[in-house]
Length: 467
Image (cartoon, rainbow, N blue to C red; front, top):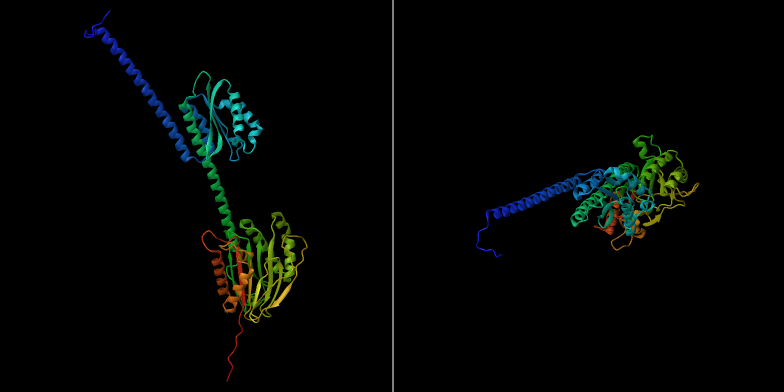
């Protein structure tokens, strides 16, 4: 039967068409509304996670949210998070699952997985496959999808979503949502690693500050006034805290200040092998022992012998040794007695001969062996003589060309400045200027603490002749 195209459609047919059109429009509108609502919910969930990521201070609380968020965002029955520690082993304390009633047997299996406790477990692809198979076996009645938690190219964990087998949730949308949560989780774990590093640095900084305060009290604030000599001293630590030590100690601290200035004084300089807080604290310990020994009035070799006996056990336990040069000086006779425990021998410039000699005596490091014996030397200092005590941080200082400052260069500069008739402080300043110029600026710096003490015997006054 042919239908005339120009014939009008019956009202009944038109009503049917309108009804179908209206129903389709309503279904489409409902679908769009449903999708919009789902998008709003998903956006809210992601915003909540993003806010938690920006503001969290407790990683465990943050990780507890992840499986719950996955179930809501991906629309699945449950989710499992297996994070790795920084060394790659399974982070057993941070295993998270939702619903929580799923965890007992699975967590037991993960705890018993010996391979998972080894360093680098999560960094091997075959180990990730072992983990996936274990989880799949546990959820054998469910569909499981998984993704890796990665940050800065390192495996930080594995994130799983699971649901009933008859439910297909393996679409790209599901996987993208799961991956998005995994990426944010990776950022959170990485942030926590960085926070831990910062906190450890802060602890070290506090320790260094304490050590620096101790060392600032360890070194004399100023040089003492002693009849007939000028003194100048300075320590330049390579780090905030160093192992260098120098000191000036009256052998009779009970005397008045005026009497002390003409009494016998002990001059000492030393260096703990090592740098930083441990070296500074060990030198603090030795300072206390040495100050007690000085009160005995014994000669320098006996002082070092006793000091070695006292400090041997502590130094042995710390696997460190100490070099120490000990001397005592009598301003009346200008006699300097000395003993050396393998320290750099001081340099003595003679005003009379215009030459330099080293003050040295046989002796082992402090803390090296029990009953070590030390030799004792003595010398009379003459007017105008200059004595330089120093640590190896001076001669071992690296220059910009890679060579060391070395002892010969130090001797050359000491001869020059001493022969110019400069005072003790001027000589010290000039020596440090030369050292700084040699080391240079910018990336170059001292590798070890550098300390110097200059003692200059005052020039004798000569009265003009009467004519």
